[in-house]
Image (cartoon, rainbow, N blue to C red):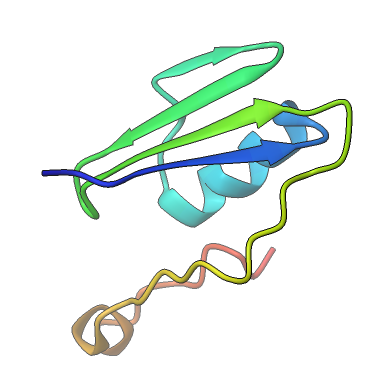
Length: 80
C-alpha cells in the first residue's frame, strides 16, 4: 500500500522545482498543468495539479528525516 497526495498549486513548474529539492528526484511525469512524483522511499504517489481558482487548504503535511540521515552529514536540500 502506498499513500497518494495531490496538491492544488498555482504554478506547477515553480512547485516542481521546490519538490525536486525536497525529494531529490525529478517527477516521473510533468505537463503544463500536472506533475507526478512516484516515490519509493518514502513510498508515496505525490502529484501537483494546476488550480486557477482558490488553492485547497491543508492544515499540514510532514516529512520526517531519520536521525541516522541527519547524523551522516546529509545536506539540507532546501538550504539553497
